[in-house]
Structures are given as structure tokens and as C-alpha cells.
Image 1 (spheres, helix red, strand yellow):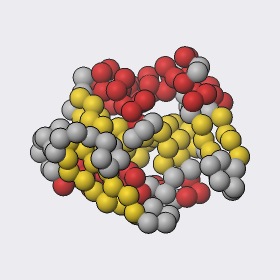
Image 2 (spheres, one colour):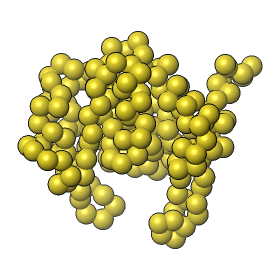
Image 3 (cartoon, rainbow, N blue to C red):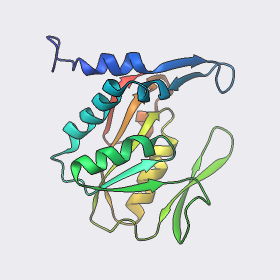
Image 4 (cartoon, one colour):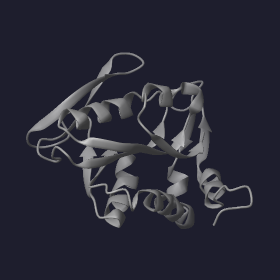
Length: 181
């Protein structure tokens, strides 16, 4: 379904389905609202299909979804490629024993957690989120998985905000994105 210039025609449909809300949640922010993408069954399916097409043959056993919107895209991708889904959550949201990774925010720090035993050393993981901005959350997810011996194959996001240079923070980690915001 590639166009003559080589770009998949589904990408334009996905990009046009994402609503941009100026000055939310605070002045100066151009919020990328994926809820409108979810309201368009064709664009939502195309989003999942593009990720599945990319990862189906990459021998991925774990799809790690970052709270909260990674929980929307991760499970259908995991099911389609025959992988398990592992939620990467904010602190104190998971019952039982967890392992955590602290990361820096614009002002202060936060933590990401996953269940102890959710993944095993040697597994191959895809990390999924809706958007990469500064890259802090994805970097924390990478560190958390690698601490327990998981190989992070790639990070994937629906949207990239390239002006915030999050891709640079990932170093040599591959990042796949569908559209730029």
C-alpha cells in the first residue's frame, strides 16, 4: 500500500486522525490527542497493522507498554505477534513485588515499575508508547528491562516530537515512529 514516493498511504490517514489541542495541559504545549485516532476504526487498525507488519518476524517475546497510552497500543500488537504484554506502570499501581527505575522529569523525578518475574533474562522486547518527546520515559523503560537481562529490540511510538530531541537521548537504541507531531 505504498504510494509512488514510497510512503505508506495509511500514514496520512493516521496523522490526520490525531487532534492537536493548543495550550493543553498548560500554555505553550501543543497536545497530541490520540483519542480521536481511537475513534476512527480504520486509522486505529492501520496503526496497529503497521506495527505488527514491522515486528511480526523479529522474534519478539515481550511487548512492554508504557502507562497509560502504551496500554492501548501494546496488547493488540502483542497478541498479533504472539508475544506477552508487560505493563510498565507509575509507582504503587501494581500489586505484588515490583522492580523500579527512577527517571528525571522537567521538574523533579518519577518512577516506572514492572512486576518482578514478568520478564526473563534473554527475552527480546519491544517498548511501545504513544509519543516520544524528551525520551525520559523510554530511557527508563530501557534501563528497567536491561537490568533484568532483556534485550530491547526497538522502541516504537505513534508520534514523535522531533524538536524535543528525545531520539537523541536513546543513543544507539532504534526508534520507530509512524508520524511526527
